[in-house]
Image (tube, rainbow, N blue to C red; front, top):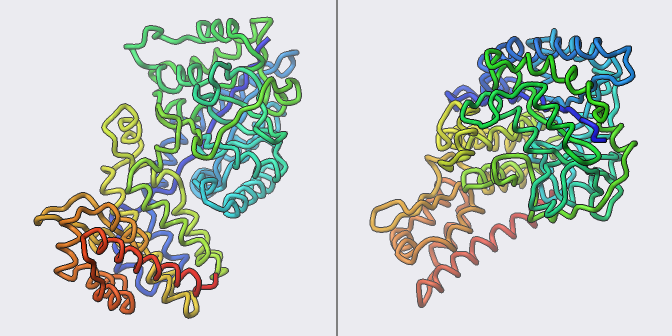
Length: 513
């Protein structure tokens, strides 16, 4: 008898200001930077549109369905995972939606899940402290706003691996959602409860096919199963073997991604009515699932095999699949000790807002089916998104440095990320060779990939030392590079690399953070 676990991800990011002007940040306090870095008029417009098209009508419909079955033995139950930044926006611009969610909680048929407050990639940081802090912030928000505590976790876009599981278990969670990807399941089915490797944390795996039938294929007239009706769908659920069927989709599916005209609200209206006609179907919350069912096996997801629900690859490539994304992510990670050294709430909050995963998601640049989905959510081409993000982040680096004592201020300047127009772009025979360094760390790594001709050209023209002196501002390193020689191009390359690496090691030792 499979139990139906119907869950919704509810998230809207703070979108960056695509017309960012660095001159406007001069002499501004950190609390003032929020409305310069982010386009909050656009954010308000989008939130209100999504609320009117999705959040309000879908939530009212769910409330009606819950009420319809409240006296019945089998009830209609759902679960929600609301990001902290979505809740912030609702409090500011659409408090009516929060009132509706509070009504949902009072029914006793709705479970709230925890996630990272900023819907971030902090679970992928080398250390898990930032991840833990964002989870605690989210738990506090849900407790304060809804008087609700959850033991079930849903990480950003289902990002999951063994080390994440161990962190969650230490924080007291009993279960976590992730994707029922074939590469972690192998021959097994997603319709069972599993245990995370070397923990007692239980895994709830999304049935991606049945979830995506609603989220992606519902309105596709090229789909052999179109039109998807509630009675057809629940017949599939009834015929599906297993302990549970976890249907987890974006809440915005209703009315925003799938427009009202597709019949998506009629589908939602009739789904519980049709499902509960079957003796073998019943709706349960995630907590009820892990109470009712025992794990049947253990799932092992090594850190290098991290899974998510994004794209066809079900990996982290949606956010870290190209050099633009990696540059942005590494620059955010590098800031952590300096930001927290300031002990200023406004600085830390801005840094965390820049961590919102959507910023990197919009930089995805593959011309494939996944790229079409990424493009749907973004308003700009990936390269322009990257340029804008790095320009804002570079400005933020400078602002953070102003709040540090020496020598941290100087060393953060040396380590900072620079905007694309100030990056070092490697050339050969007068042509750009698709290698750029936006920081000293990246410059060191790019030295290993640049062609022999490029290394010789830039060395002969003294471009390396000029860039480090004039852009990075490290005269000591520039003077050392000016003296580097080699009996071969490869020896020259290795000597340059060694010199920069030693400087970076020196900085990391002296900064004492």
